[in-house]
Length: 329
Image (cartoon, rainbow, N blue to C red; front, side, top):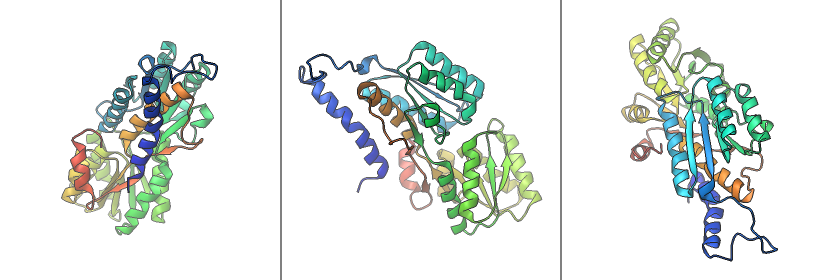
C-alpha cells in the first residue's frame, strides 16, 4: 500500500498529467465550449515566489527550497525562493513580489500578524497565496487559497505521547524563535500528550553556542528534568552536548531532521524525531498554485493539507538515512 504522502502527491499531479496529454494533442485541448481559448495561463509564463522566515544556514529550509525548485522543474514553472528570519524584512519581500506581479506566492507565517498586511495586499492584487509551515489556522482568514504543513498542536501531542511511552515525566521544551506561534503550539501539544505540564526554555537559533549554555544551565539547576524536547534539528545537536556538559542523562527528542539528527538516532543519542516532511511543504504549494492558475482548482477543501507528523526512530532511521543524501529529507 502506498504511503499517504505519495498518494496525495499522485492525486495532485494527476490533473496536470491529464492536462498535458490533452494539450499535446493540438485542437482537442485548451478550448472553451464555444471553440474559443479557455484563457488559462501557460506553464512557461508562470512565475511563483516562495518567501519564508527561514534563517540563513538552516538546513530545514534548504529542504523546503529543494522541494519548491524540484516542483518548478517538474511542472515547467519559474520559482524564486527567498527567505529572511527578520519578520519585517520577510513582509517587505512579499510586498516586492506583489509589485513584480508574480502569478502566485508561497509564504510561511511564523508570526501571522507580522505579515498579515502583506499577504492581504497580495490577495487584493489578485495574486493567489498558499501558506506553509506555520499559521495554518489563520491562512483562510487572510484569503489564502490553501495551506500546507503539519498541525503543530497535533504534532506536539504525538511527541508528548512518544515521550510518555519512553518513560519521561518532566520535559524541557526548548523554543528557538521568539513569537513563533507554531513553536508555542508544539510545546502546548506536548503537554497534552505527556499528561503534565512541560517547562519551556527560550533560546536563540542564531546563537547555538549560547543555546547550548542555556540548556546546560537549566539541566544543572533542575536535575528532575528527564527529557529535553527541541523544536529544531540544529538545536537537537546542542541539546545532546548540553546534557553531557551538565553531567545529566535526559532523553533527547526533537522536531525535524537533518544529518546530525539522523546520526544521533542511529547512535542512540537522540530517541526520536518528529518529521513534518518539509520537502512536501516546498513541493506541493507549487503544484497547488499551478492548478489554481490553469484550472482554478483548490486543494484541501478549506482545511490544511497535512505533511506530518511522522516519528523517525531506531526502527526506521536507516531507511530515512538512505534518502537524506538526495536533499529530500
